[in-house]
Length: 423
Ligand SMILES: [Zn+2]
Image (cartoon, rainbow, N blue to C red):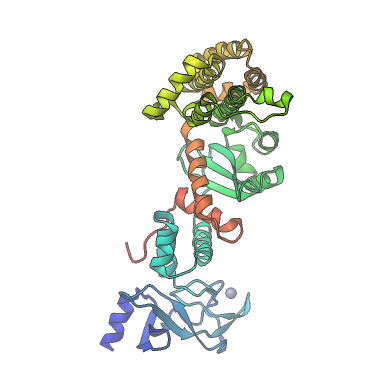
């Protein structure tokens, strides 16, 4: 009897009576035999309603629990069925596990915590489970959070972004709260109907309370937001506008590379261009050109100096990219004036990609000005985007988009996973 109480405590079991403990020689695991106590028994597994017994169901079954030292532990009990008024014959609820799964709640909690905090291989090796199993576990842990908290409550200023995964073949829409910095929603797709799922969950009343929406300038986002959040001011995300400038800069970089390696000549003569020292330099300077100046290392600084001296056109393109970043750094009226100056500079730059960019920015000027006026935090969309990109790599091997969505919400949302047994 004393022994059983120790095991009850060791396994963190509540509402549960331990009947005995033994070692299963076949699996070399500790088997803790239990039953729900008088208050916990005879409840429907789906709704928890107290119900009369129906039958013995599939007999005894086991749930994987947290290890005891180095040894696997299984909780074993009868999986009786009850006759629920609502759900009919249903396997009875057990206090130690979620309905219809093979791991205990504590195991699930530990798995979710490790997945968010450590690496994929650490999680799998420590818990001795397959990565796909982890995908199912974090999905149900997140479902439980969703059932108890409303992440969409009190939203005023939100950011909407789309992120590609599976080598750019699949997309997620993510919604962040600019006031808390949290991820509040994620769903599969990149279309009006996919974004409408978010607004359906939000509901008309709460959507009307949204004051600002920042997003990239995709038409489908603009259309949906105008229709579903009628009172919101639409702001351009500086992160995406600066990304346009990086694209334009990259066109110039490729032009410079082609010139340096004699590609144009080769097109007319039919001969392949030679890789010259200059073209190699340009190819290597790619990251130096993209990065923010503050993040450059010594070698990258030298690469930029070299471009400044040898390729005035590419250097001009670089300065234009940095000039656009400056516009968003100063914000407000000063930012708008800086943007006016930037636009005339870009139009006169004789760099075709930046002339096109100037037109694109002019087309979206209203939304860009709205951002400069309302100063929605610049870094949030960018950092969320970067973090979810990392998570998509971790989520590789999960089945379908739901585990990735659960992982993103648990990692970046307001309710991170908690370790079991802590109060
Ligand atoms: Zn029920």
